Image (tube, rainbow, N blue to C red; front, side):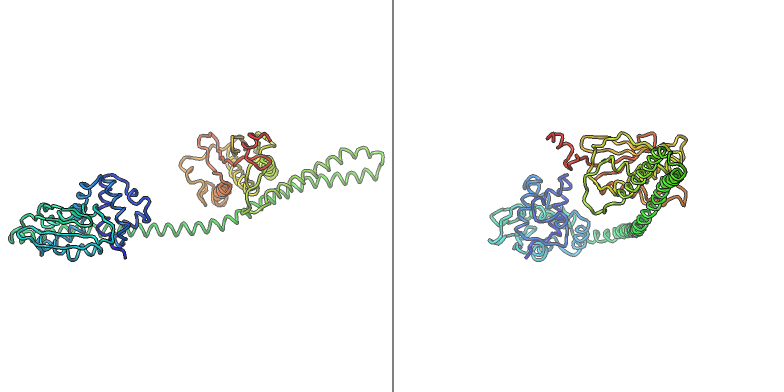
Length: 482
């Protein structure tokens, strides 16, 4: 059975900690209860958990004197004041103490025995006792002393004088109540209460208006959330479409790249056939033509290899050791022809064949393609058209910088460039998810894609974990020398 009600007890305890500037989380550290559960007025707790929490509270606030001051806060809340105000119109102070002993106290503390004794005049005695099977809690008795004194505040009287005789598992309170108001004063107070009711009604109307405004804000937030979820679903759909569009562009480039060397091979083959037929003495001329055919064949092999490297793998596969030079070659083979046709100079520097990162080749390659497509659009609008990939070998990482000759991204839109569907281009020139996908792929590798705002041109950068060819961390290989 849970003997203690959180409703009154911990409300004033948490208020006391707040007033003293003490973090409330410290009250429940190490206990099997959260601060949220403690502040829930509808909950109850076991006495054996209540006792150590009260000891912790006493240590936090500074002992018995502050505990008694805490009890005075029992009627500091608006709800308590309103309840007490109504009771004061129909109850004498002694009757309120009697109600506390017979109804209020046992409701909040079911294991504590409350006894009331009328000593005559304005004096009463309240005795609180804890059964022997429960742990003693003097801190509880100190807080109760403060609350006993402030009951008279309900009648707009000074605090009652309370003398406490503290014993093991028991406290006896001798309470002297200040003289109560005369009948006429109570009538006058009731009249004033009726007048004050107008102010209460006014405050309630303000409160109702605030609730309505909060409800409208909540409804607006709900609409925004639904719109966001709809955009997210659309983003996932268009992401797949973007992949298809990217593959379509790549296929077109590959087709063109393969067609040119094939034509060279065909023409040279036809020429060789003619030479063989007309004059066998001219066979010596075969050598440079055969070399041209072999070079064209190698070019085709390089393009096909790059395409296979870009498409190999699964996004769910674990990261592997990949050579930076290899993925850069693949990207260059796929994009260089398109850049050259548009008069854009494309460079990658510096190159280090031994440099490796721990990542997924497919995702890194696709992120670079999306970033290069973005750079391509930016470079087209500049006078001196160029795109550059800088590879910087750092201690434990490899830093990639994709820079173009564009004038940079305006500050007004720089915070939104990674948002799905955000684009500065005209309608019909992309859906604005390339940078979003690039960032997603880089984050899947444990990195982060950022815009270098300090660069005079447009520059995006990301870093990946560096490893040795063996797959071990680069620093480990340097230490072992193997």
